[in-house]
Amino acid sequence: MFQTIYIEHEVESLPYTQNIIQHFKNAQIKTIDKVEDYWGRVKKPYLQKRDNLNLYVGRKKGQLIKKAPDAYGTKNAEHYYFIHAYNCIYECEYCYLQGYFHTPDIVLYVNHEEIRNEMLQFIDEDKEVWFHAGEFSDSLALSHITNEWRDYWLFFQNHPKAKLELRTKSSNIKPLLDLPPISNIIITFSLSPEQEVKKFDHKTASLKARLKAIQELSQRGFQIGLHFDPVIYSEDYLARYRLLFQDVFQNLEEENLNYISLGVVRFPEKIYHQVQKNYPQSQLLAQEFIVSKDGKVRYPKPMRMKILNDLKKELLTFLNGQNKVYLCMED
Picture 1: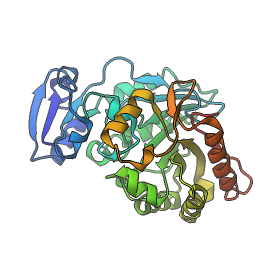
Picture 2 (picture 1 turned 120 degrees about the vertical axis):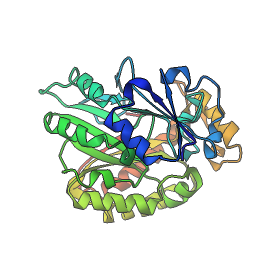
Picture 3 (picture 1 turned 180 degrees about the horizontal axis):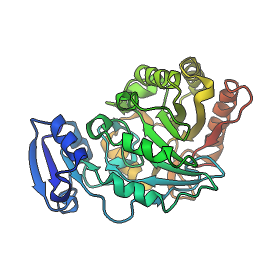
């Protein structure tokens, strides 16, 4: 997968780092002083990730926990995300990472103890606080390589008012199966109808594989979240999503469903231009987009709200009257 692995001197002896080295015995290993001195210094086209990808392993400096944007998570709670990796092995045509960094090369940060210590500054035992992983990467795609989540499990067992969300398009749940399900850790899967997964979610786990992962985790008692996001318009979107919802709820124990988010495809303006450059023939670009007041390129608001309200109404038929649905980046 990786031609070369660059490792910072100060993290070389950490168990997380050694796990990574063991998984890529044929890769060339180079030690460096700082990731920032090399990663992204020479601009590398996003689509070069298809045949030339490097890995950087280091210690994340500076602010490790950051406030999440408004409408990022469920209401009546504080939401933060933490940075444990940059970039993703998958290639989704709508992904904002394609214009965010100057390189598609992966960074894995291994100073997880520091991340958890910084979490303590935000945890309030009197109110609900969420920590989200996967803002700049996929939470599970490479987790079998570093095995960091076991240590987070112990941390969140001791802080039951704090919640951890692991966001993924992977079916790589093996690192979780030896861990006990606990109510304040939620595994959330981004899902789209099968046609959209095949068109736009390159290299990700198939819809069938994600549904199987949901089923296995749910049967074991894990809390599950669902992100139907980004919704991409098609004339028969409601019929496609109705079939998807049926498949999902056949594979999910309802008592283990924590929440559902709905969101329509959207881009920061500079990312939209990168999508046009990287995927000029993509059906993703076939619809009308506008620049909204918040600077994002998205469908006009009446169109967005019709799509979201149609899908929310459909979802509620599966939830026995429980409204576990929120609108991502809209509410």
